[in-house]
Length: 253
Image (cartoon, rainbow, N blue to C red):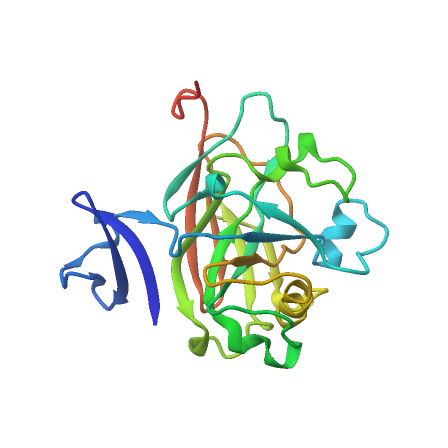
């Protein structure tokens, strides 16, 4: 089943996908365009993978992929929902999308073996983890200014139950900008798979329900401009729509 969180007539409601729209928790069926989309889960601790696709590492001029997962944390300020607007600062020269499979943890996990990892997954959603490359430093730095900007991580629209995704390590990823395909890949090309990441993270810290793992992106980094419509899509999981706006739209104090 596909689950969502939306705002409708001033109320935040859980919702599910139905044939003729979305069904709200109170039973009403409305059109997808009638609601304000929120992140499908309220993010707790969010882990973001850097350089988890070899082709993307090469694209960024890294000669070798990491030997261990390269992980940094992301704050809740970054997340917005489907059909949201992402602010591009006027002084940035290169800001690109990153289509990523987001793994949502469903129950407390500590010292989990990779063979059991999927038992701790609640489901999957789509994330678009924008990067402001002007501020990229050495790969071992946390890169807060690259990855922790307000509104720069659209996520959604749906949280898809894990039972509905037969093989999360064999899903096609695609990004379009203004209708043009600019990025294609597959989760099969991850350096560190979902089970390996859960084993690695839970080996030194406790994972809790609502924690999210953003698993990295394949090559295809193209600069985006104000006014661009960016759609990140993952096979079987969903199609996430986002628009880039500038200072004239996004009032920054």
